[in-house]
View 1 (tube, rainbow, N blue to C red):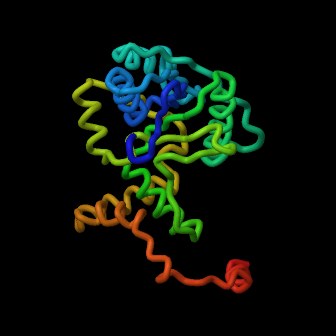
View 2 (cartoon, rainbow, N blue to C red; view 1 turned 180 degrees about the horizontal axis):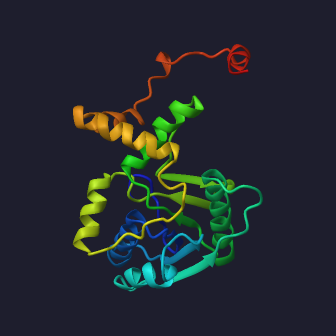
Length: 231
């Protein structure tokens, strides 16, 4: 929060709550932060309902858990996705819908429950499948600085998040999406977890690498040659 100056006095924060353990824990953290921080900010929790939250829907599976922290949940139906549904299209449409909700409610920040392992996985995903060295940022400004995406749990491991969830007796809502366990991210996650079992220190090293880029030791790419190879 301090390193990236995520929140400012008078901010309106839109918290994207999927129902997974990460976003539920973030809701609890931000509620505590709201009470203790030397600044005041508003917190608005929204859920984009894609129909995969199980019996009873988000009203019965997610809202009661946020109520433990004194937070209410706003539920918005997911927009129609043209053509064949895919993880990429779902994520893009959800993100666009969150942008519109932030503009509608005058929110300056959208908070996501991504943690340190998510940032490492994204780094590996981009290297494996996109040929780029990049990851999600703890704070990313968009639209000429009028909106920022923030990830307050960027320094927490998944294990830390799960420990908080256990302390607070939170029950993550499993996604019933038929593609949930077949994504590239899931494959990268399994690969990394297996590697961590053999090299436990690798997680810390990978995370440190994200802010320790030695530009002089990276290739200078001839973009014309690179394009011919991919073609």
